[in-house]
Length: 333
Image 1 (cartoon, rainbow, N blue to C red):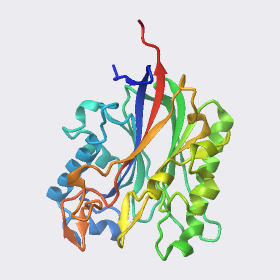
Image 2 (cartoon, one colour; image 1 turned 120 degrees about the vertical axis):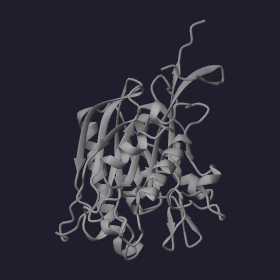
Image 3 (cartoon, rainbow, N blue to C red; image 1 turned 90 degrees about the vertical axis):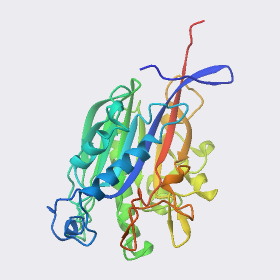
């Protein structure tokens, strides 16, 4: 596939997007998960029928289609997603006319989460080739009945370069940030262990951690357990860079709660993807996709599907995020 070249300082680059999007309770209409799933069925509290479901699918496909940019006109090469019920809902999204021509492929795994939601992985097979997929369950020693989303690690070739992407949806802040903090730190420790295992197998690869982390970049789970830093100049070999830390410092978030912005939807990069040597893929820039008017409410926050039990025909309570990786290419004279 011929991709456009980004020209800067008399050099030419090819650019690839890697994105994440929390799809906010994308359930089908069939009640097969007990009490919680009943809410998202025609006879449930939300009267979740075919019309609402297909409208939600169409809106999700629209949001993903708007992740295209001038330098990535085919959209992201990779999209991690969360809050999906099953593989079927992803199949319906990628078959939507707004996305069908991109032929996104799906990786999905049913995890033990009590709400019945999982993470998932979409990729454009013309840009990314899968080599290996693993799924990892978070266990809390003193909480034998604890159930949350599994973490999915996909290793493959992005533009021919080996890279591993870990997709996460860490435990929520239910009960308060402080009282639930240890759960997210545990999830971060598991994620860091997965990343370290990938690097032990092949240190010459980039690692990307992405997901709805239910924490901001400065919280312990991200800044201490992962060890991701705010500024590129502070990234040490074997360390991590979080480009969305400064984004939040500048007042931009991905979700708003009681008038305050948070940036839970993060994408962190290992040191291999940071630097000035662009003979291989390196971090170029990041973006919060908050600039699509249809996806915002009157206050500028994400326009969600329901609010106060009322169907708004919206999108998600989160904005998508994306990082762009660039590699220099030699242009024949």
